[in-house]
Length: 168
Image (cartoon, rainbow, N blue to C red; front, side, top):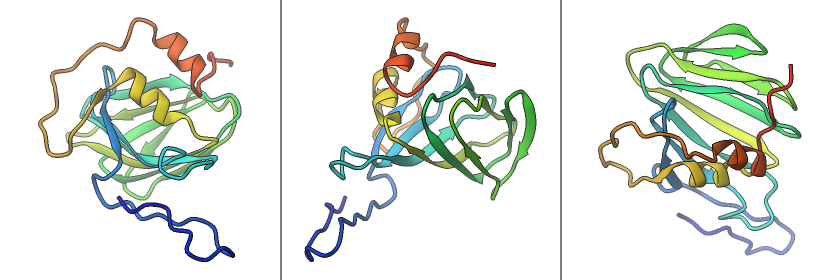
């Protein structure tokens, strides 16, 4: 991974992250698949956002959730699925994009037969902490592990990172 560059004091940092260079974690049930953080405060100190990719296995889903004080962009680039936004279903195909703000409930489901892949950006960041705490380290190219359960204290991990209890 290229380190943030700041050769010219009149310019801010810049970074280039190649495929599979971000920190990556296998995700537990029900999502399965993995999350890879490409850019965050971990590789750009002081950065107030995080972005990366999430891959959801066929039949997997990211359960209904919301964020308290965040803006989020989801861009789907491979596979098919459904996003329930505040309970309303929206079909997903390559090119589908969502912009979400605070307390917008969303559930992401892979309804296809291949991986559902999305690029995400969330501001402020913190999703990288959640992935690390609930997942297992992933090395690109290795086979997916057998599905595994979420940690018993997942609700505490959620609240301590970037999630809010569901508010309707």
